[in-house]
Length: 105
Image (cartoon, helix red, strand yellow):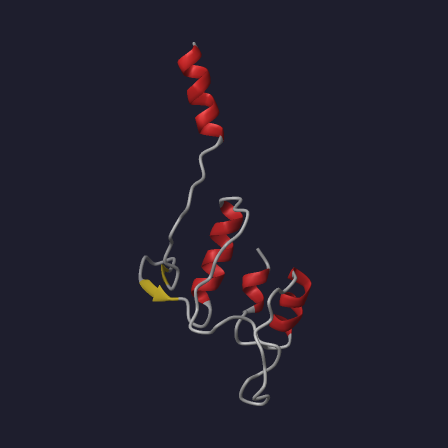
């Protein structure tokens, strides 16, 4: 009984991490397809929602979310923090770092 109680406590403190690829999927005909631009980001958002994750991490080839388009504003800097509403607004207005569908789930 004491061992069962310890096991129950351990189950409540387990932290799971998932690494999931997301760019490739299967269509309704069972054929492998690619999800195109930001498909992996969208997949991560969907899986995060399904798994009730506290957060998702998306690795990308840029340093983070910038204050402006660096092609137009050479002194653009990495924003240290972005709220959900700010990320939604950036996505809505076409920021390439975040796709609007990724913010929905």
